[in-house]
Image (tube, rainbow over the protein chains, first blue to last red):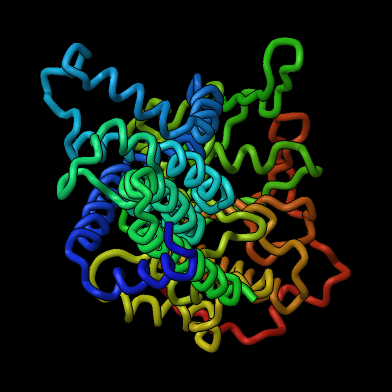
Length: 234
Length: 242
């Protein structure tokens, strides 16, 4: 086994050498996670909005369900979808197991509760007066919804970044649903798991650097935007 | 000027209670009220007497236990009336909510269609807020926020304008400006209902005085506060017509 210094140096060299296989894994990762978040975003934000402002039987129960789902491990989501999508499962006919679509479904399932719970909190942070005023001024419910969305945009952005951070780094569901197939379903976390088990730490560290850099970038972006929002209120 | 063919909305038998079974509390009991274009009604009553609840019912924001609504043209169910009320009645909070952004942006939310920029400029001029157009609306004083809300109402041109304690915590100058703006609404044919715990306010504007006591409305003669210097505003009236 190489020394830690040598491994890190090799990882950095690998990153900047334009290694096709490495960048293909990174590309697949971002493609799948971005598709999942884009598909989950609108329905989740709408649901968060409804849970914040509409009063209907079972509303509190639904809020509790989504808060509970925040704590469900990725591997349990992977297992549940695996059972549903496997050949003998109720959705086996769709032949989705070990495809990118299955990985997207897994990541939607993981990100949805985060988006719902955090957007619900964001909408709740706006006073009921805000919604009443928007309804009075805007005329249509759709225009009112967009006014309120703008009002809680920092909270919604936090939800988006938290959900994206969760799914880009999860390994359990991606491994079970994607099968870790090279050039097709191998993403950053599954590649790190595989290369580490093979003893090839350099590629694992290179991919880890990408994940940590992205997490850092997301945090900095969020802090900058929230800082601007806070300054605007001063 | 509001272009609606409706000039009057009659509410009959409004009843509203909160709570369930044993804890049920009757707030408004079989109350009738008529809001007529160009008239201002002052609604007085102690804190907690149900003034705000009544205003929120009249604006369609909360559903009464029972009520009949008549526009002079037709009688409406609550479901039909709610749509009309949302469109024709505007409710202004004691401290109006200001959205993130400038005063101009807050006015933009009240405008749709062509000539938005010109209409917003006219509204700013009308409410004497031109110098505040680019100020962050959340940072305005209570009186200025109230004027922004009135400018929004001026842009929306509702048939009925409901105001909940609009001049509480205001100094005399802001109160007079607000009253001048309300007079302008009256002249343009808007029906005004102003809730206030102090009957001495709004004597320049009001035509009728109703008092909400134990959930029921009682007609009261308008009381003038003779301690005040006169009925004429000491401040120049800058207001234009719609």
